[in-house]
Image (cartoon, rainbow, N blue to C red; front, side, top):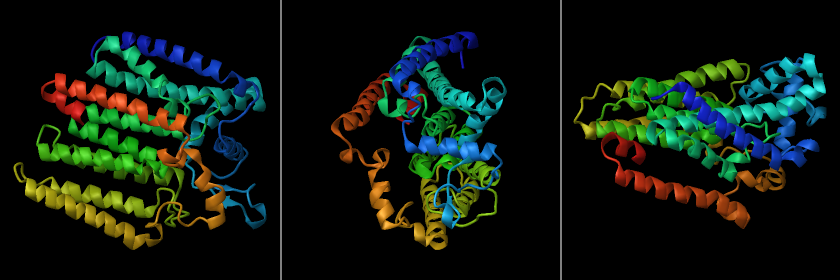
Length: 370
């Protein structure tokens, strides 16, 4: 990062203050009524309450649901519970249990917002200039699909997924292949630990790494370090948050089959790194072997998951619940206002990227292409 660190954080702090004020004003009614944005936020708080009341760290069963049959196993991540529980524990002696929970409902989303803005600002500071940093942060506030996941009372996992994706983007920007690859791979590993929804984005980052390899620039082996970071942090996160008491291959969360795929890719790509420059055919063939091996592991170890993450749901539950969750539906099944908010801003982003690619030269142009 060039320039003064104090100036950087001053600009980010200005943007944060404006956006946070806007978020509290526009959500004032919901805050006053203690109205959660989504039932998952309610259940997340219940899960944290149970953890603080003594439920085991690795026990992810929600015993209040279907209690007669022992509860329902929740494949949610403890990573998301940690900041909520930390705020409650820190403030409970001062505010009491109830008020500490309310404070957590307000503080944790703003903490997520702060992390998101710092990561956005770093990209803008490096690639656009210090004068554009505040504007880049304020543009984030205009992205309704993103802001709905980071508003007050929204304590479920999506905001932290946004942060993980932005951290991975920062790793992509790092000029050192080893550091950048590990940052991006580790960030997406944490995102996947939070929710398997990050798998398509992980594949996109892998594709960018493959393109870098074939381009034979100074970040040629970025993909190797990315795969190593993805595998190592995934293993560590699984051990730290899930443990090895449940090693079944659940289709809707990171499971041993996914860990095996990541380890295979890391080992195979590390071996492929011995191929000298100027041998694109060998590298492409190696990519094919890596992909085929990962697919064989997935279909061979977890064939029940080949139809999708939620294919094993009871048909009635799927109809009444899963097919009605708006945020999981494709854009053509959204109401027109939501569809426009989802589609139009990225179109402006693509137009801006086209202009940046046209105006830049050298490494700057390549990075904007990525």
